[in-house]
Amino acid sequence: MQHPRSQERFLILTGIAGYILLFVITLLHPQPPLFDEPLFIPNVYLFEQHGLSRTFLLNIDNQAPGPLYQFVHYALKPITHMQTPGIRLVNTIMLLLIILLLAAIISRMQKHGKQHTWLPAIHIMAIPMVWQVSGMALTEIPPMLFASLSIWLLLLAIEQAAKHHWAGLLFAVIAGLCLGLAILGRSPFVVMAPAALLLLLHTAGGKMKWAIVTIYIGLALACCIPVFLIWEGLMPPKQAIISQGGLVPWHGILAFAYGALIAVIIAPSWFIYNKWVLISLVVIYAILLPANYFWLHYEYAPLNEALKKIFPAAFMQLYPYLISPVLATIAVYFLYCACWQGMERRTEPFFLFILCSTLLMLATSFKVTHLFSSRYVAQAAPLFIILLAPFIRVSYGQWIRFTAGMIIGLLSLETYFQFH
Image (cartoon, rainbow, N blue to C red):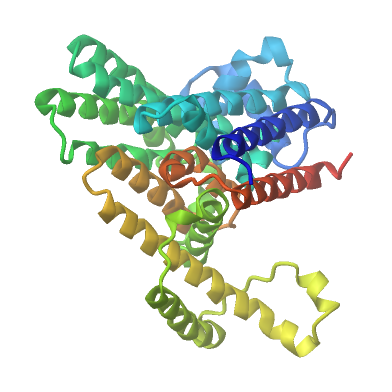
């Protein structure tokens, strides 16, 4: 049996190897823009033509996220020339910066040594959906980077406020601007603004703490609200149709089920296990199964084509209705554990801030009416790493889950490139 320290180093090396692999295969993907990539690139040239103007904002087309993508790629255009693989490597390199920021945040959160700091941070490589958004020129990684930067700067602001008021306020200003940019990249990050109010609970700091949180929230909203007013909504008017029609409960359920998958891979100790929980889950499934079959009609059929070759047709007709209640039960279980962990750590405002931000980010999928994508969950990946860091346990099983998560991520990414 390996010593825990050796297992820890092995996990870290596995994550580093995963990142190097991601970087190399992204570098070796010279294919022209594909999937959603061709939709975003014309808006870079639109920004180059009109600048950050009303004309630009109103004419963003085929793009629901805001203009942060255009800011980043326009600034890097002299380097990437808007060609592949350069535009894809922007996200891959930004992922490395996110890992560094997560290590810095966790270092301040846990007060552990370097290995404890790097071990949770590198676990972002085990989140399967991160591979897709990091290996392609998509819109999720830039706001994930700026959101992570805002959290780190906010921690610095709170720490520095006790020593130097001016430094605390300066960090708060920059943190608020970074969150504003994150919101301009993906509007769901706006939920971090109200969640930041939880930082005011159970802590000393008085007026300075209030000033820091107020500046953080105020500047973040000041960056994005003028754009939202021009759009008359949270996304460019040409794409507003994707959120019309109210709420879609199934999309929110899928988001929380995917969140549970992330927790299973990274930190199974997040979940509460006992006999009564198991009985409750069985009862919930027993209720949801007939409710779904007779009234709700939610369908979800993973590996459907492969299973058709094994199971009879009568079972396969029921199969999509059997899986959907399973995912709903898992989503309920994840939410229950989140509430439990929140109560257990109710005296830790920073943990509550991250927990609330994570849950609200997942909940924004309820409002996405046109389709569900794992990319909506991927954007919460840095929050998940910070949230789950205290629950990570080093073991051989942890390495198996870590490796499995990376393999799934690699396969999901390579599917778009047809393994060429």
